[in-house]
Image 1 (spheres, rainbow, N blue to C red):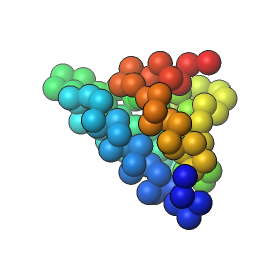
Image 2 (cartoon, helix red, strand yellow):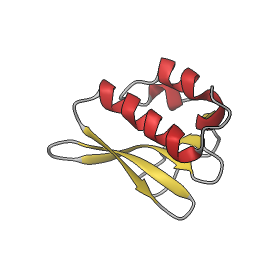
Image 3 (cartoon, rainbow, N blue to C red):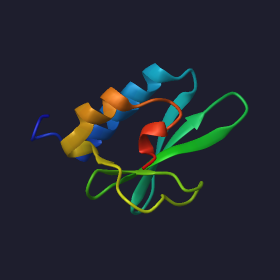
Length: 95
């Protein structure tokens, strides 16, 4: 993993990898503390995961507006591991 990678680059690589796994559009919606990773299909939109903008922590979505408790991965330190296990269903985010 590149030690000089910033959160923006890590999120971009994560989104690019997710896009290869699904036919849906993958969007990133930044917020104050967290950014949402949203899958936008033809008929629906759903939150796949959340990224804490200050640390790069990846969290499972508990709902549309909030992440579940507990960090699953850190995109700055474990991006290669995340892309190796990621799937479009988010099963890698379960504990």
